[in-house]
Image 1 (cartoon, one colour):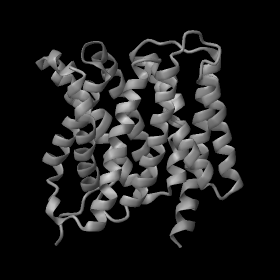
Image 2: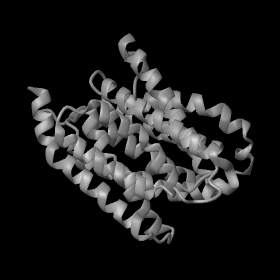
Image 3: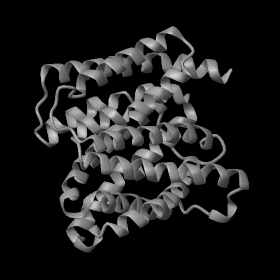
Amino acid sequence: MNNNKSFTLPPIPAVFLSIISVQCGAAIAKGLFPVLGAQSTALIRIGLSAIILMAVNRTNLTKLTAKQWKAVIPYGVCLGLMNLIFYMAIERIPLGLGVTLEFVGPLIVAIFGSKRITDYLWILLAGIGIALIAPWTGKGIDLIGVLLALTAGGFWAGYILMGGKISKIMNGGDAVTVGMLFATIVVAPFGIGSGGLMHLTPALLLMGFALALLSSAIPFTLEINALRQMPARTFSILMSLEPAVAALNGLILLHEFLTFNQWLAVGCVIIASAGATLTTRKAVVQENV
C-alpha cells in the first residue's frame, strides 16, 4: 500500500490562498522597511524561504536533469528580481499603487493567451478595476517607483510563463525550492550591500521568518502546483484579485479606508476573478483533451 501520496489543493483555492498569504506578508514587510530597507527585507524573505523549503522538501540537487536545470535557473533568477524590484518600488510608492502597476505583467499574459471572447470580458473588467484603483490624479508620485513597479510586473509575467513550463517537468515543491536558492543568489549582493542587515535584531528576524512563510514559501508552492493544473492565461486572470485583496488587507490590517471608486474597483476585479473561475473547468478540460 502506497502512503506517499501528497494532498494537493485544487488550483482555484490554491491561487486564492496564495494571494491572501502574500498580502498578509506585505503588511509585515511594511513594518520592516523603515529599519532594514527594501533590499535587505527582500534578502531575508527569499533567503529564509529557501532555507525553510530545503528543510521541508529535502530536494536532492544531484538528481536534477540538464533539462530541469535549464528551466529552473532562469525561473529562480526571475523570481528573485521580481521580489527585489517590487520591494524597491513600494518603498517609494504606496502598496496599493505598486500592486496595481505590477499587475500589468499578468494582465499582458492573459491578453496574449486568450482564445475565447469571454476571456476578454474578464480581462476588460480587471483592467477597469486597475484603472479605478490607480491614483491618476495623485500628486507627488515617485516616477522611479512607478517604473520599478512596472518592471516588477514584467518579471511577474516571466515568472508565470516559466512556472507553467517548469511545473510540467519538475515536482512543484522541488521547483520552488531550487528556484528560491537561485533567487537568493541574485538578491544577496543587493541585500548585503545596502547595509540593512546591520540593524537586524532577534525580533526583526522572527518577523522575517513570518514574512518568508507568508510571502514566499507558502504562496509560491501553492502557485507552482496551481500552474500544473490550469493554463497560464487562466492563472493570470485569477491573479486580478490581487489588487482587491491588497485594498481589503489595507482596510483590515492597516486601517487604510477606501474611496467609492476603490470599492468599485474591488467589485470589478472580484467579478473578473469569479468569471474566470466559472470558466476554468471548461478551459482545463479542453486543453487536456
